[in-house]
Length: 182
Image (cartoon, rainbow, N blue to C red; front, side, top):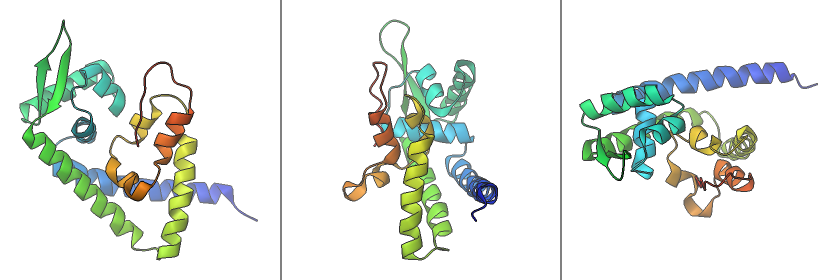
């Protein structure tokens, strides 16, 4: 008989161990906080967001997002650009784009290193299971941006693959905003 509580506990431990490795690598690579690193990744694929929208995508309140943006700007990783009215668009600088690339490389190396403990068939099984799990974790519009805030989006759709989070987002009824992830 399968022990669901044990499996959940193992998933929690594995998730925490991977999270620790990823966050250490990405924050070192970007020279910033984990939310700052996520912001750089988001801006590298979707420049020009407002502070509020960027904060929403990385899971921060508007005031916390404003502080994060201030810090990233002081580091020379992003720049603010006035548009119309009071709207300010956030764009990565060249240094911010390089930092985003560096942290995605670090993230990828940590994850592929963890996968080396599994053979090819086990990796294929894990791919299918993680796709199902991620699709199930998507609950409402906007979840895709939060779930994929540190993803290397091009990898997820390489070779005509379908991003499970992007697919779940497309299947979920939206409230006027198209949030295609992958």
